[in-house]
Length: 211
Image (cartoon, rainbow, N blue to C red):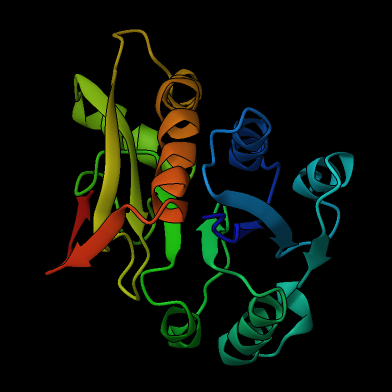
């Protein structure tokens, strides 16, 4: 039985390093029954769009500045995703606030990668280098990355996968960020996408069970 490939939309706001990890994984056959059908950027001219172009993936810009509210932006986003027949939405460095319209249109079908071991260093204000600055300020010995399902509460959704990464004594936020990307984010994000696309994830009582 040949299952129809799941269509993945990747939402980006910047360089698209996690997008590249997904593109590479797909080329290596590591996204299982999934394929990237759309890259959607919240800003014009970001390098992630160039990555999409180089790999023959449809790309679209929905610039936040062109919309007068989160509500109107979220509606346009849902419309674009529905039009693309999206099965799974991946937030890969997508830094634009969206509202419940998106979560309601894609319940348990939006995933995000966060550069820490949730529930540590997550929630409002914890993004980019801020996460790693906080981890180093606390003196933690391990940090890492978490892939979770996105819900209206910031970084509170059910956890799919986590991977720990050693924190070194001479780390800076930048070196820690790079190590977590290379050793954790770029590994567990494609793996979580594969599990979803192969129908191996079940969400129950705010927990993810892997079949």
